[in-house]
Image (cartoon, each protein chain N blue to C red):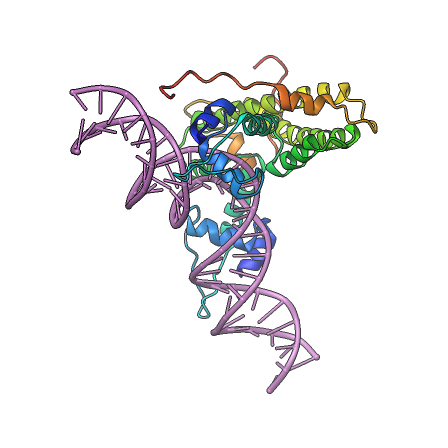
Length: 140
Length: 140
DNA sequence: CTTGACCTTCCAATGATGGGAAGGTCCACC
DNA sequence: GGTGGACCTTCCCATCATTGGAAGGTCAAG
């Protein structure tokens, strides 16, 4: 199997497959006489694992951890669960942050008449809200 | 006012102020004889505007649009509202995406015993196994 | 033999920011 | 006058994950 076929079978672009090899996420593949990389079912399986982890929002670093745990027959399910739960907390923090933005924006947008006149509370807010005060440094 | 003071007053790092100038988001500042950039209250006001927009999750490109609208006295509030609402939709799409991830992960994590044994439905899912069965309701 | 679809490596860009080196400048203090 | 340190300048590099493209080799069908 060439890299293009492995890409089609796994959903990971050929570019990314080479990159994953380069950064050591996957092992360097064997080559044919023409210097083409050769893939088998196991490699495709690994690539699919990576793809799914990425789809779930795991970073490549987290994915590497999960991949090693997957391949470690002596791992504990607790160690995997820990990685997942840390990631859940991180996702939830980012979700909350974005929800805060949406809430503010919706409020501003709701207050904005959205007509031909220039008066706009959205811009007023952007222009007027002061950032958190910075503690004074030793500067004249 | 030097760049450091403008930075403190606006909450935008000196690095970023120079970068914003470089990419044309803000106009090149006047220089003193010693080649230091000079800032006034208006520039700080603009920087605060940018900071606030970034805090609301607008990209630099969107921020540039808003900045131009802010400085255009003939803009319509509708044009601003449009930018905001497109951004809201985008944020909500990303929120929904992450919520989907969290939901899947929580389900998998819930199904994982998290003990010393190696058996782990999280990895099974990533590997492409059949979805983990839902455990009996609130009785773990 | 040509054509087109592959493959290879290498370099660069994205978006927004941080880090740091190397060198110039200003000011306060001794 | 000299010194130290806080500030400024430009320039390059790193991040994270991914895409794009150039330049060149290889393969299979027509």
